[in-house]
Image (tube, rainbow, N blue to C red; front, side, top):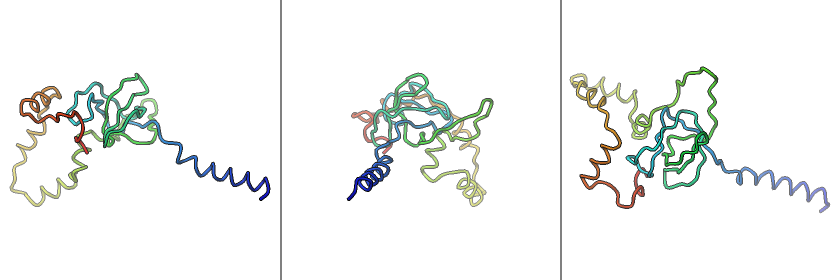
Length: 166
């Protein structure tokens, strides 16, 4: 095999191997308000809130949770993988954010519940009163109150975040 052919094969190998070696080291927040949590669990203390399109560096993985550092202010914490996307989100000056779901919408979507499913259910159950459901949806529970409730009921995982959200 001549030198040019060896060089060509080496270059071809390098080109094919490059994508496998180049792992995405940063992600963008894909929800309106992404909760940066102290522990990798749904009710972990929220240490910061990151906005739609903010970029984070991935530091560690634990199941469906990623430990990240936001590129803007250097804050560190855990975010659920569903709140992040592997592409740059660029907003133009003055552009309003119309995209991006909330974390609650992502959780419901993951369970197969969305606006279309709700509309179909209401169409088939016309005699049901949804006022109580609407009232319950407006209730806001702080993360601190939720942690206190879980602790009093002995519902917190003794290993921290292991097993939550998987």
